[in-house]
Image 1: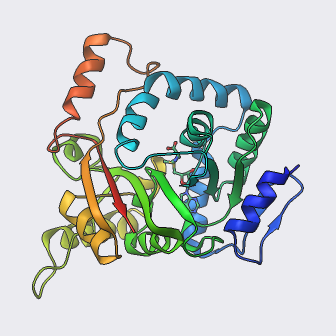
Image 2 (image 1 turned 90 degrees about the vertical axis):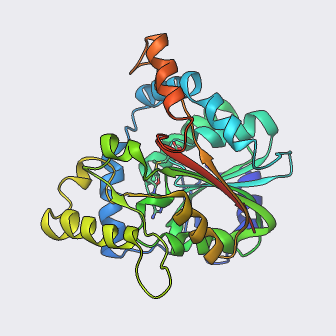
Length: 304
Ligand SMILES: C[S@@+](CC[C@H](N)C(=O)[O-])C[C@H]1O[C@@H](n2cnc3c(N)ncnc32)[C@H](O)[C@@H]1O
């Protein structure tokens, strides 16, 4: 079931050719290229749609990680009740819930995992949220009008595309002038060796005068190993196709796609309380991530 505010958000934000289904979720003309379908299959296996498990994961995130996320996000944008926020790859929509609860802002979440959207919809309706819209669609080609969004959040999303520029262009298109895009992505630094080297591809890098830079070369080598030789077997055991970035490559990607006022830093975050309880180890885990050399994720925010 849809509510009047969701319909109003859809009218204001979305291109004309959408429909809202019987569950109140907006559908768009969906890109079904083999690469997107493959990634969709991987993500459908990662998430659990059982409401009890969903709520337990949610409690864990809110207890262990929310404060760290908000501390980083708040550096980038000042929310208010008229802010229009879009979460790309919204999944369980933790940040969406916080934004609605804390600032009463408008929220739209887009994901290609329909079952996940449905679970989030049931949960939001149980909680009585009204100022939101859930969109079943592809981040690379969103059914969203140009220049309508104030703030975009992507938590661990834009690294799952071989062509990051394509996604950044799409984010830039839907943002209003002065709007902010905030993303977190895996780091290509010392942490990569221990945490990701077996299931991650180093970033696209930036072409330098006349020739490919080292990261472009690494990207090709790792793609060849994971996709050409291993046929995605290892990648798909984790998060499917996944890149990691140097600060420099992340900055260049944003610059090339029109963004300005680009800020990049270490996205320090505590571990799940269910996975690591010991307070000394929790502190160590957090402190290791404060340095750009060893952090697991970068945050990057920039303006249109
Ligand atoms: C790491 S999860 C992030 C979930 C959420 N943002 C968070 O912070 O918990 C990545 C999400 O992106 C979604 N996703 C990946 N590629 C997508 C695409 N091309 N179009 C729409 N959603 C996509 C996945 O279904 C998944 O829910």
